[in-house]
Length: 221
Image (tube, rainbow, N blue to C red; front, side, top):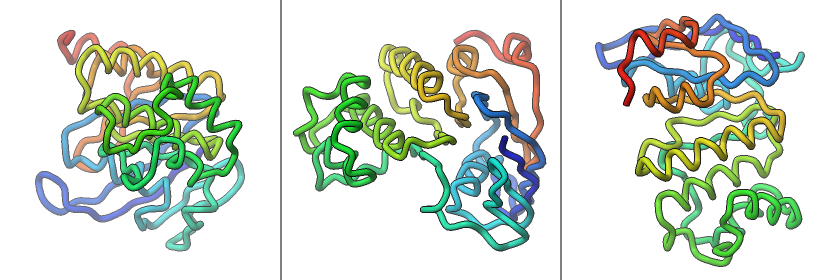
């Protein structure tokens, strides 16, 4: 289980505000986080990953990741992070990006095949399409064999066909590797397809809503 009770000052779309997070996540949950730009969604993920400072408590499976202002180092958290802009090493090939995280060649090959990119494993990532880069980014995040997967709008830059394809792959990987996943998204269909829980962040406040609210608050895209 993941237990979060922390706060962090940030500058949002309407000026300075405080991100308040006091919520628990169960093992195996797939949480989709929605809300307006600048509400604090990305900061929430980055704080969980240890990339941002905060004050309070984060406990993951009985290990304290944050106590007061003292935080566990990024490298000591069993977290995979898929960034919105891919954040790949563009001086490396597809496979080298994976092996940089974990030198397990067999596991890297397994992920490449699962993501249907084994045939381009030798290519430099600068030569790839957006959809291919996103699959590389996801495979690289999984090389850590993370118990917690964080994704910040991972499909936002893709065309509708590729978004549908990767939505299915992400859901399959979440279940196969028995991960707990938190994903920021603005896409209603993604939320409907993948979420087991739905959070909205508004002006730094995190609230949970039933999945049925997607049908009443948003029109089908």
